Length: 119
Image (cartoon, rainbow, N blue to C red; front, side, top):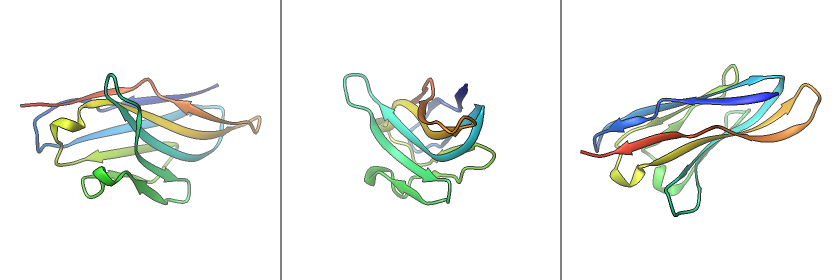
């Protein structure tokens, strides 16, 4: 069994910063990639950023220069969010491609972390 645990959401003023964390635990053989998605009620979930086990990072255009995804270290990854805007308000979900100890590769989702950017 594999689980993803997210933390770090909350309320922040426009222009402020937050750091989200995502930790994978359980019967893990390899974490191949981890990503952050976000979703606003009534809208589709959108990709924020992805990092591979080799450290290659990719970002959605609207997040480039403001958000930084860390490398995967000890099955944990972080998303540093700077210069936050009200339109960044959303539930942020961690996603991971994990191969377990039985060599099954499965996509996992975290429970979501609410980020509210408001004065």
